[in-house]
Length: 576
Ligand code: PEP
Ligand code: MG
Image (tube, rainbow, N blue to C red; front, side):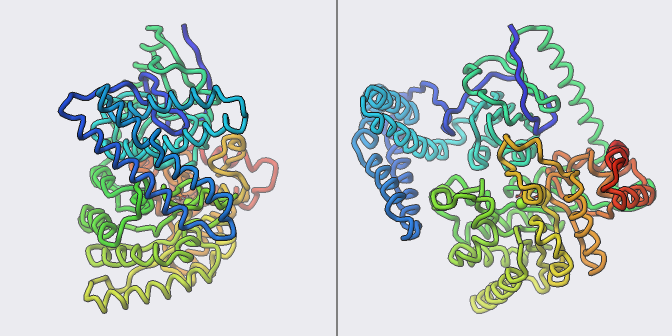
């Protein structure tokens, strides 16, 4: 029997694999037992995970502002008490000792037992505390998983992950586990989770409502990221059809490899810079193997996720040096921390205190407010500038005041490095991301103060159209081709020309072949994208005539409010 449902495709590929259901962000744990000689080790792992969970909750507690203290603090207190209770600190250890369970499985057994007790309670309030149990257990499981990434790989290899939602931090954990695909009930195609899936080239669907309830653990699934469909089937003819499509797309990918050494030049001789977006230093390998012109966006915040504390200056410096040196002289743009909204720290209080995270204390706003977090970060980036061509990029600028503050902090940081006898480059380029409409409207002012600008369309579209990029309910409104968005993009490109500074784009739009003719016609020449999109974009660039596109796009933009603007726009986009 075949069952199908639809969602929003985030990676245009097909995956076939068995379902692996995650519940409430917690990886559903299968029974696993360990030999007698590993029991002490499992007990130790369990104790360490509980200790890490306790440390991380205590850190959150300390960070909560006094004004919100009572309610949230009591919530965290409850969780800390639960962690200390024998039900979580001792009983799972008994299971490990007496039944040879692996730590995760012991915790899962105890969870099931506790949930039964809560479900049987008459008092609805007490019954609802089951959620707290789940929350605390999820927290411990995360630390357990973190500790044994390597061992887990085999379990998830080739599986299709089904979840209500995946935080970017979860996705990073799954990143190296060889999963074949992702399906989430919520989320939008521009959420960071979707971006990560795309970066991995993993077929993924978001917005598949009730997926975790409809699908069963282990059943055979087909994810079609291009059509946005999910099939649960064992029918040979259907499976053969999709296997055939996979073979064809592999052949296409192989034929694109011929472009690796070819330049990204249009038919009329205009050169485009094609750069890579990376999340972790290990992504450098893909960047180099595809002959990207460098890294146009290094999202440093991923180093801060899935851990109980923040990395210190030395650890950050090691990561940034690895990226810079790995590029062997190619340029790299390191973006300062863009934490906040859906990219949260495990031990950060934002989640509990902010009601509208995307509009809240995010990115540069958070950094300027938390010098203890920001100073070591800036020191580490500045030290990395001594090792290769590094540019520094500031996310989420909305106000020139932020630029002045950053410049002052950079100056102070340089002075502190000089005092400590540590090197950094002279004349470091400092640029900003234009992803808030206010910054796009004031692009001239930012272009005057900064060495380069990069358009972050993922957020620019979200903020211009007032749609949360992770909310699938409003996703149908997410439109990079909305006239208001196109106008803002054009304003930024034109401001760059007037002030003679480079303008790049590092949002997902820059890596989508459909938008390349339009963006080239608008005058954009620097594109930064997921490494997996580089060759396809290069193919499109090489097939286009920039001068003729400039005329077509100019005409379309002048008439963008007229009734036939949409036809002109699709004619341009269809040239890819
Ligand atoms: C963007 O907003 O377009 C961008 C590149 O930043 P991020 O996706 O990391 O928010
Ligand atoms: Mg952004």
